[in-house]
Length: 465
Image 1 (cartoon, one colour):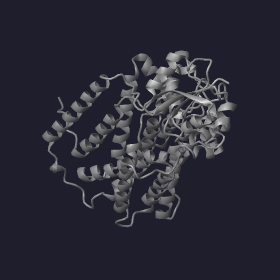
Image 2 (cartoon, one colour; image 1 turned 30 degrees about the horizontal axis):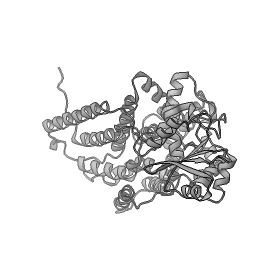
Image 3 (spheres, helix red, strand yellow; image 1 turned 90 degrees about the horizontal axis):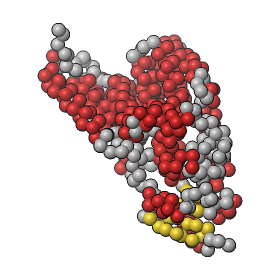
């Protein structure tokens, strides 16, 4: 009988980052976008069909809707049906652990400490922005694609990866961007066409064609066109803006970026590393939503930059200590998993719980009223009420008509014409953050009555004429 071989210390350090990823995903779901994805998944599992038109709002009810993340939402719905939202949390924890582990494998530098440093630097660039969303499917696909290319595996392995990617998250164009950046870098280094990499690019393109075979057809692959058509609207969304480095998360990201720059350019790097590094760091500085992907793109670059000149001595390993290390990691994962089932899987922190209860109690959420609320609150109401929510707006920027998005922008910023928007949309109830300018506009108008204030949230009702 073969003895169980202890894992290497380098592999254990990578697994430790995987544990941090698992713990990061093993928290109650509180993300507004995830609320909407979860509700849509429940709807799919119940009806057996993917929604083709908007079922949630009164401003775009019945409008054509391409459910970009249908595959991820399908898993949420069935996991919730098989158990409850705690199974969805477990799925998110596993996905985040896999992404962190693959990032560590991409950052392997040849020694435990150097690999730990390279992985930490890469994750510092964007892992703090990983969240419980279909984004995790996109990050996992990106990491798998990069690992296939870096390890020179068969290009045809990209076909299933791309299919899942396209059907789960709209970040798949970044895969072609990474392949193109690496190809340009190799061409500059070798002064010739990188034929090996061209095979991977070709396989990725074939994968996009294969991905058109899905319940929604080629519309999923055409998603970037939708983004371009609504570029002005997307530009008003926080995650499409440049990141702010003033808060704690932003400051940590900035320090990590500077550290990566110092490591990479302490000696002249090959173009094969410099080009994708500059491209993805640049994309992360342009839009916050690109930082999570940048962490993975930076990983192999940091691994090569920190690689020692001489191979390490394998005799330095201590199998007994390594086995104890592995058992400790397994125990930590077990305790974290038990902790997942110690809560209900959802968190309402930061949402207008008391205000919504008041509205339910007084009938203000009934079919006879039209409620204006912020997009974050719209997702929360959809989670609570499903098809009965009939919200003004939520965060599906790609789905809503531009007119609705413009009206919401007017209300959100308290622009002139806010009252006219409420009139034109026949809105008679407003649920809004009291710190926003709209609350003052309603108070000064004399046409609206504040019914309740619960924390930062206020409920306003139009006065009878």
